[in-house]
Length: 304
Image (cartoon, rainbow, N blue to C red; front, side, top):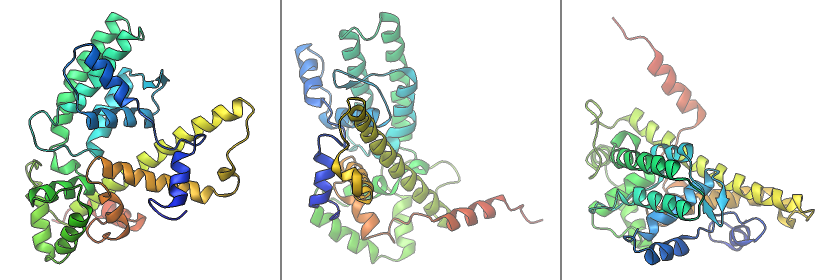
């Protein structure tokens, strides 16, 4: 494994047997929507929805994830707010719900849903999509890549400009800690609950825990997806790829790198990897001891 973007990484990601990352049929679904005269859905939002559904274990039919109520709830209510940071423009937050409804309609057109189930899923997508818009604005649910994407945009930095992002991170690192905490607290687009406006060590810990958990969910989804593909080979009596015979460490490293790449694709390209590898002081993630100390302190009875 030669690191993120290296030759070893590319081998693992592009190998047809391993197929580490989903190959979504975003273009085909958008073409179908155009043929049906449907309003356009943003390409990025649709690709993200299709990717997270597949990594969440949704069954595929003709290359499209098939939705049910449980998967819809997991996607809109539990997963998307961990990963995406939409631009603050009209309709940007609602785009994910629109993408889900397009997929539901495609299932109906393919006769994979009867009228009753189609109507129920539409209703669920409608209200859960509205809930998602609120979750994306909650300051207590933000992760480091999402938070820094907001701060970059607020300072006029193009999140897709890798050099500008790195320079901004270098400058942000030089700020006094109090000033950095103040920037977190006033990040545009986030709404703090009453009594949670201030940022302190406990708040930083919680953001780190959320970020670590979100990344590990991605890694788990990527591994399980690859294992499902490999199980198909075994069922057909075909040999396993040579990579898994003697380089499982390389496979794990590729999974970690791909999870970071996806996280960056949904926030700022390369940002998640930079925060882990080069700027961990700006995006601390807790170890077991940190979490135990936090839980112990929280459970201590108050004085008096």
